[in-house]
Length: 346
Ligand SMILES: Cc1cc2nc3c(=O)[nH]c(=O)nc-3n(C[C@H](O)[C@H](O)[C@H](O)COP(=O)(O)OP(=O)(O)OC[C@H]3O[C@@H](n4cnc5c(N)ncnc54)[C@H](O)[C@@H]3O)c2cc1C
Image (cartoon, rainbow, N blue to C red; front, side, top):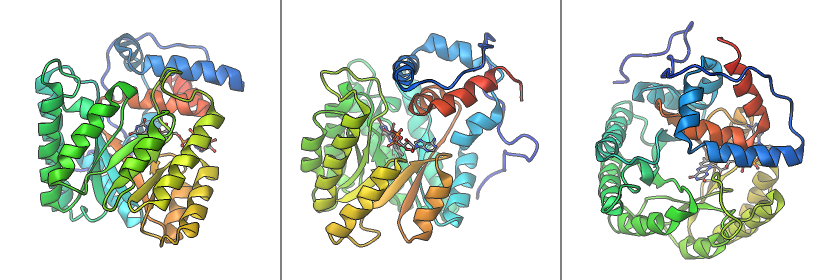
C-alpha cells in the first residue's frame, strides 16, 4: 500500500514548518568565484546554526524551491517519488532528513521512521530498486556517553528491516570528527549485513587510504567530494585539489574488487569514471552513478538510457535546513533561487 497521495496539483509541496518571520529582502547578484568561496564557507557554518534555521524557516519559502530537492514531508511522498524514478529507469536511495540529534527519543523516532519506510517500500514492491541512506548522527551517534553504541544498535535494526525487505543500507558520511566512528560502526554492521554501503569524501586527506581499505570484494563504496566545512588540517580547500583527489580515489575503487558508487554531478568526473570502468574491464552494472534528487535530471536519464545504473538520492521529511544549505553552498544558482523565494510568497 502506498498510503494517501499527500500531494495535490495545486499544492505540490506541503507547507513547511513555520517559525518566526525575518526574511532577507535583497535579491542576490551572481557571485564571482572568490566571493563564491566565501559564501560557501559562510553557508556551511550556517548549516549547523539553529538560530539561522529558525529565522529562515519562518519565511514563506517557495514550495517549488524546496520541492525541487526534497520529495515531501512524509514516507508516502518518498515512496511516490521513488515509484516515479524507478518507472523512469533510475534507482533510488532514500534519506529521512535530520542530523545531529541530541535527544534519545528523537533518535528512536528516526530509527522507527526508517523501519516504517522500508515496510512501505516492500509493500509497494519497490525494494529491488530502492535502498536507504542513513546518517548515524540522526540515530544517536552524537548523544553523550553511549551515543556510538546506541547508533550502532539503531543502525542494526534498520539494516535488519532492510534485509527483511530485500534491500540495503548505505551509511552517509558526516563531518571528519565522525569518520572513524562511522567506519567502525560500518565494520560492525557488515559482520551481519555485509551488503551495507559506506561513503567516503574525496576532500579528506585520509580518503585515499580509506579507499584502499574498502576496495575489497563485496564492499559498496559511494565516493563523493564532501559537503561539510572542514579545516585545512584534514581537508583540501581548493576545488581543483578536491577534484584531483576524487580522481585518485576513483582510480583505486575502480581498480579494486568492490562496487564503486560514483556520487557526483560533475560532467568531467562522470566522463573519467566511464573511462576508468572501460580501462578496468568493468561491465555496466558493476559500478553505479549517483546524483541528488532535482540535480541534473536530464543527465540522470541519459545515463540510465545508456544502460548505466543511475541512483537518485531522495530526501524526505521536514528537517530540511542542513540539507538545503549544503545544496546552496555547492551551487550559487541554488542560493539565488532560494533567496529570491524568501522575498516572495509563491
Ligand atoms: C548521491 C549522493 C550522496 C551524497 N552523500 C554525501 C555524504 O554522505 N556525505 C557528504 O559529505 N556529501 C555527500 N554528498 C554531497 C557531495 O559531497 C557534494 O557536496 C555534492 O555532490 C556536490 O559535488 P559534485 O561532485 O556534484 O561537484 P560540484 O563541485 O558541486 O559541481 C561540479 C559540477 O557539477 C555540475 N553541477 C553541480 N551541481 C549542479 C546543479 N545543481 N545543476 C547543474 N549542474 C550542476 C556543474 O557542472 C558543476 O560545475 C552526496 C552527493 C550525492 C550525489
